[in-house]
Amino acid sequence: MLSYAIIWAMLSLQSAFRVKPYENTDLVRLAYRQITRFAAILSIAVSLLHTILLIALDSHLWVVTFVYGIVCTSLLWALNPGQRARVFIPGLLLFWGVYLTALSVLTLSLGRVAGFQTLLLAMFPVMVVSSRMAAGAKLALVIAFALYVIILQEVAGTTQPATQLDATAFSLMRGVNQATAIFAISSIVWRYFRVITEQQANLTQLATTDLLTGLHNRRMMTELAGREVARSLRHSLPLSILMCDLDHFKSINDEYGHEAGDMALAGFADLLKTTVRESEAMCRWGGEEFLVLLPNTDLAGAAVVAERIRSAVEQTPFETGEKPSLLTMTIGAASLRASEDFQQLIKRADKALYAGKRAGRNQVSLATTS
Image (cartoon, rainbow, N blue to C red; front, side):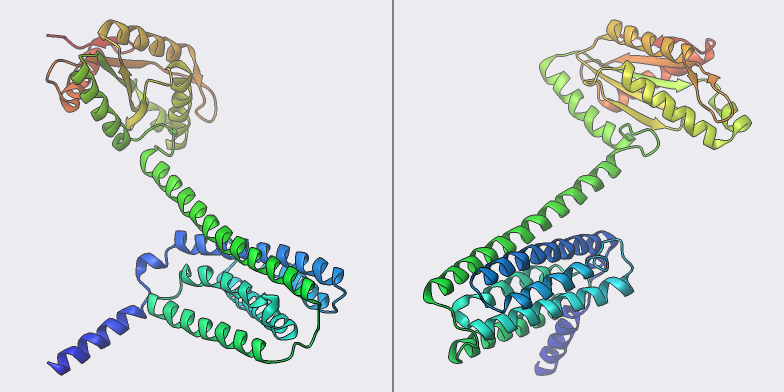
């Protein structure tokens, strides 16, 4: 039993000191770099504040904060989020080294009562969001740094300060440093939250948007339509869809190339955005097929919208690279029946679309309502 316990402990320890794949992705690294640069800019601003304050208190230690600010400002280029790792990592280590040295000198020079050691607490949030250290390594670093801060504080409290200030000056310095530490920690955490939420929003957009056209993709439209179908059936409201297909689209790809076809698809998407109301969701269903969801619209209303789209396409030259091309579109329209789901509605709209194709294209074809 003891041997099993030892093996389990060793495996757990090994796992704790191994970076998980999802902890060291491009997005996580970018978030960490953005937070680090934000912390560096924040510390430069604080160093300027300290420089002004120490000059006002007639303390020669303003030189320390001034030099620190200059050095950190020169390191900002290395801490750019897009910088290469071989430049960013040394810049990061140098920044934290200078930060630690400057605050240690100020703490030992002015004593614990000045409160400069509290500013070291701002390093903890940046430590724990590092993408290159496993949980065990972060814990070990946090413990080691916490011990350093405690020892520094005790040493500064038991030795005579090298620089003497009056009680009012010490009180002012301590208040400024405590307020700055609270503000710095809160700002770093807030900034990290903003970076994560912005990245989440970008990921959500990528997962739900067709990159070529900027419209909803098939997955997003399926979710939206499912909710609209449920709402329409629950409240007995009309709901219609349009299945739109560009006629003879393959000939554009064959004659001008796929890049020209992409330009035509993007052009139609832009036209669709100006032709359809914002309340009517649009998506690229696949290839040259587009789907328009029309809430609170019966089949007659859907026919009007479809004809407006078809007519706009027919009259609009689309860029295809060498010269604008005139295209046409066939549209199948269907209105939701009682007890029908979205997939059944799609099948009827698709059937109407192909009926329009067989009838000669460039027309609106309505699905039967019975």
